[in-house]
Length: 335
Image 1 (cartoon, helix red, strand yellow):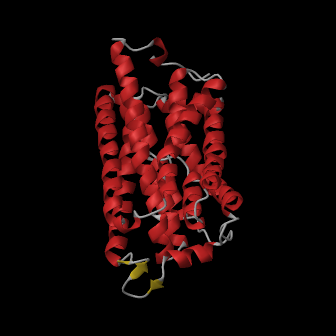
Image 2 (image 1 turned 180 degrees about the vertical axis):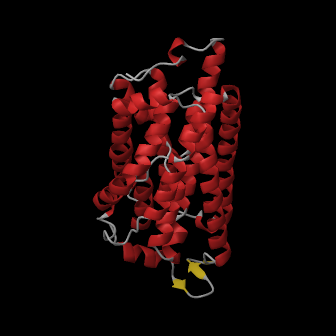
Image 3 (image 1 turned 120 degrees about the vertical axis):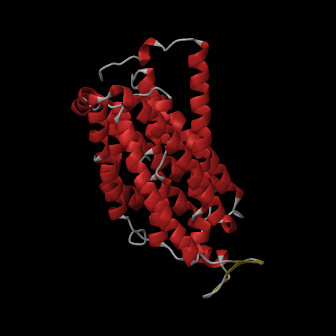
């Protein structure tokens, strides 16, 4: 494979204060307007995340949550999928499709990110184990403080030096606070006003999913000049969410988890924090590389929505065709 510096030199033939030229096309640089919009998106995302986790907390039972922490089989499986299978599969896909180093780094950064808050919303639509989902999101975000640098060191060292990629610990910390603080508040609402808790959960799920769609659309508009990329990157961005969902489900199933937890672990594995990936890329690389790198997280975000819709649609169709909730969906204590 060619070196990272050689590849980025080929991607951008001239860079100055006004324009970035790539091949025959002169592209506008990532200007202050984009930086401002990125900041706005980050702030709105943080606030929305807190609202989502508050809504998800309205579905969490304290005893069951504590049960998962005492017997963390589901959390351990999720950890192995999140920081074992996903980074390795990203690395393997880069070699299988022989992508450029600049694209390989972006793909591996995304593969090493923890799960996203949106996974909790999808789990609610799938009648998953919300106690497990919230605990997995919180644990993966917490453990990412150490696991992300380790995974990135292992899987990106052949393309770039280990000190190039900057981990935004402050962003992860804000994400963690946004996960931890709103959940107990939601749990209290569920305990005192269960009827209101159901309405809050429904509203939060719909609002959060809508926000994910909006962020993806804004990303497409902001970086539309980045879409002329190698078809292999499109292919990886398309199949990677399917791989995450599918393997997460199969691993959980073969390790003896009930169906509703298999669905939960599948979603937690397949949905990555793409906004965190974008933040890492922004902190670590220059304008020439950013034009090439920003595309993959957006592609992944789009297709994780597609997979989520297919997953939810298939499940809801199955549930309605049976005219009643399967027995396994009723409240159960963690095994």
